[in-house]
Length: 237
Image 1 (cartoon, rainbow, N blue to C red):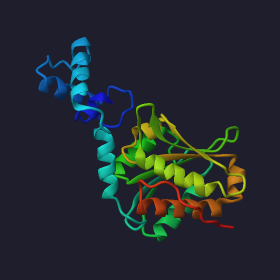
Image 2 (image 1 turned 90 degrees about the horizontal axis):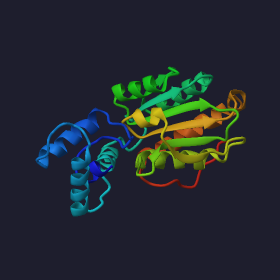
Image 3 (image 1 turned 60 degrees about the vertical axis):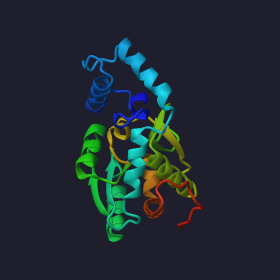
């Protein structure tokens, strides 16, 4: 996180020393005249702390990059690149959402791969503007997760999660809470991403049309202003 705040691009803040973080660490060591070994030892840590005190606390490169990308995203569903993934049992709902979004001009790919890493890779390779995941969790409260850790959160993901939660709360049997989480599919996707966790498949199947319309409308509103909070929800009965 500190490297990002002082201008070295580590990518998404995920607590993993991945290739982007390793490159940022190399660049920092080179710029500071340190031994360039890619190791965050005591000397490097002290140098990061010293530079951090001199530069103050900004939002960080990852946050700035996400906001810039969102400004260039399609302002409506037309042309919006969407990946919809499901983790079992929600194929019919996924297909209905895909069909509705395509009719509105969105460019949509659906993924039925149960592996979170494979879903994230599919979204990244497609160059998606947004990722929507669907999973059934019959023994847990409904939630809409976006990527969030103590020192970082996806602004676009949070905005979309809050919109969806506000809209879906009006449907019978669905009252989700937006929550920042460090789930693999959210951590590894490069675009704003949410994972919608709903109740039993049969329960959702009974209101699948309402869910489809609600998600479509929330996504369209988000595309128009991807950093705004939720607005008063519309109702589909």
